[in-house]
Image (cartoon, rainbow, N blue to C red; front, side):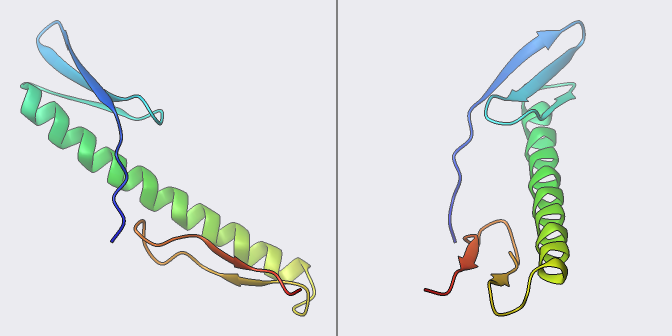
Length: 89
């Protein structure tokens, strides 16, 4: 499994802690620093899951518009997989 290292910051805003990822536009909050970071982790997992689903939908769309002999698309199964596009030579 591949690991992606993402940077984040946590700041106090009024009575809540806000955790923000610096690599993508995702943030979350909690009543403690730990809760904010846990919520950020969950938000990031959902973000990347949605991103993969959107990309797979795009690949499906492309595969209906391009002749099958020109390009083969292998969909991403999960966030830890590498994007695979196979072009014939």
